[in-house]
Length: 157
Image 1 (cartoon, rainbow, N blue to C red):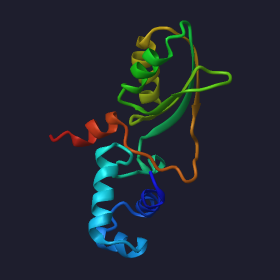
Image 2: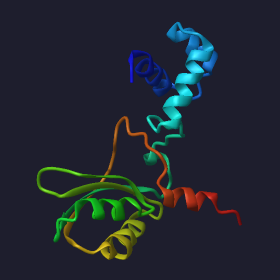
Image 3: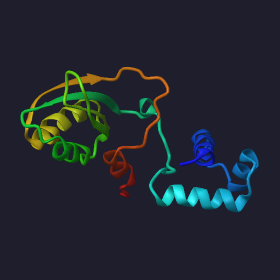
Image 4: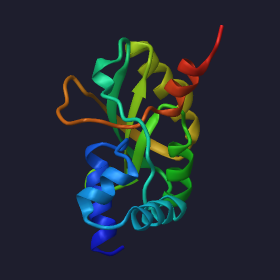
């Protein structure tokens, strides 16, 4: 990525709906240049343009951070398994007290969080212990909808 790619990403981070001509104007390059750069960034997976939400504004949503210690050190395997759970916003192998940290959003309040811990995370296996931190309030916290919420909202009755 060069300076133009980085500048394009910065502009899109302010508003992902900014038109290509407007981006061209702001960056001082031609519209075809911006369009080709944007397409390349999308095709290579460097960026994804999506809707971000503030989960604290979603009625019934509970956001929690969970630190996990593993009984076996299969980090890549466990990270893949944990990240595939619908409620997981993100997860990462970390240094420090825990082996893996994850953020989850459940849609049925504390009951949803309980079901996630008991019925889903528990089934991953190789988890020695976990500690859950419920997010009471967050600032500047915008993220993608977790798959579970997308599925719940996409259902048509």
